[in-house]
Amino acid sequence: MNAEQSIQVLLNDAHLSADLKNIAQKVLNRERISFDEGVLLFEKGELSYLGVLANYIREQRHGDKTYFNRNFHIEPTNLCVYDCKFCSYSRLIKQRSEGWEYTMQDMLDIITKYDNEPVTEVHIVGGVLPQYDMPFYQELFSQIKAHRPELHVKALTPVEYHYIFKKAKVDYATGMRLMKEAGLESMPGGGAEIFHPEVRDQIAKDKCTADQWLQIHEEWHKLGMRSNATMLYGHIEAYWHRVDHMERLRQLQDRTGGFQTFIPLKFRNKDNQMSHVKEASVIEDLRNYAIARIYLDNFDHIKAYWAMISRTTAQLSLNFGVDDIDGTLDDTTKIYTMAGAEEQRPAMSTKELVELIKQVGRHPIERDTLYNVVTDYMDYQFEEEVKPQFYKLPVIN
Image (cartoon, rainbow, N blue to C red; front, side, top):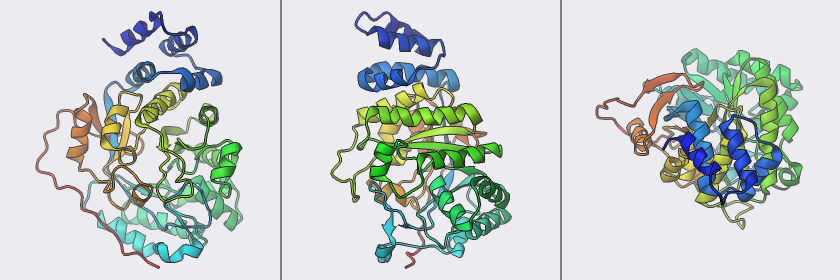
């Protein structure tokens, strides 16, 4: 039975409510669902029903293709001027002894460590400190591009840009233009958390507002550039807060078309100020992926971070709307491990990642940051491959 036939079965199910059948028909007709229908999916949609709809959309867009890339992360510091309640990663400046602060040379040393590796992207994101200002990042981006022009620089969230632009006394449009000129090529989606102030003011009051986060992405999109978006789910928010979050993203995407990937981020409760909050179940993870795929009809891709949710859950997610499982991360990705991620040493060789995708009947495609195909691995024959070596700079206090 194909994906379309599975929806027809739903439409003929005498036990399915009229409202849920109407949503299924809309999906089949490629019609947009409403805010209230999004909330209804969270409240009433069973996992199997949501999976049928999300998988239909996924296969209409991408067939069996599942994307990943070869990337590495640089996290300049885990010290931060902000005090987000959910964060297991950052340390306030008064806890400086527990943190690291990389110099520009430290970061350039990480770049050169990968000179002989077939990576296509460096992802730079971390805490917010005064010394990591606008001139610092302009120089860093410029030096990276001078050293390795083909390496795609995906860097910094609106939380970081809001801070450094304010410090530099430049508006968002000017700041983003200057970053592009320095070598920035795309923006990750972090710092979005939950947009609605009822929740945002409780978990991340200090950082940029939802409107500021959206405005910075909009200015980036106006330059013809691409970015991602995230949502932190499974903590104190209600279902309608999640839909409100996705609705704001959907509206901005209608205006600019600049988002390429939506990444739901699972709240983890290890070693943070919200450790009393129970984490979402795997079933809720899959439901959330599926509803995101159904609601965000103008986003091309839905991504699951395999390192955060586990390899097995990532495999399951490929039947619930997900078409991207990130990349062959290395152990510099401390944000995951410090938050209590399922994968405490988050690295996979390309061969392992390809096999993980093939095991669930999907078609592995290595992409670059902008989803251009680098290698089609469906019929690829691997030679002996060395698993990525873990690499850490010493902690700098």
